[in-house]
Length: 139
Image (cartoon, rainbow, N blue to C red; front, side, top):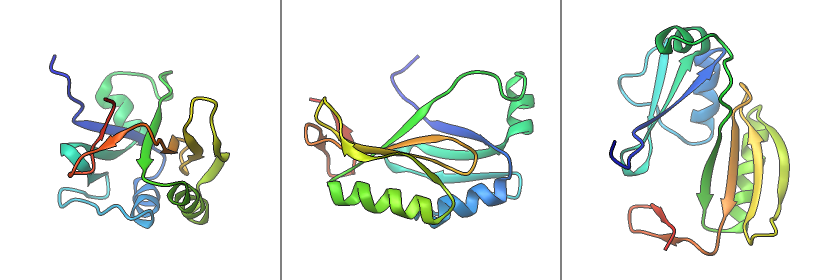
């Protein structure tokens, strides 16, 4: 296996509602999106996909709601961006589950859950390096 992640697929209760939430955060749905699945092209060739929970469970051969909790992280370049994005997510129907603040390990972060409960960490980490394509690197 090569050290690469290509798609992050979230199981959602309502693809249309989830798509509207992520579009409200500024993501743009890619052309192959349809009422059953939505795709968002992210940086560095990564794709975020939203797939109905029943459909994803069937496709993966797993029961609906099988364990495997994940928190996704979105790094930004300032504390102000953390605060703004948490506020935007809440205005769109997300729930702030941890208000922004400094962690003991030197990262300013907060968390929100999207309408389906997926956890997103919004983080400003002054120790990472950003490349010209928006990639975050741990040197």
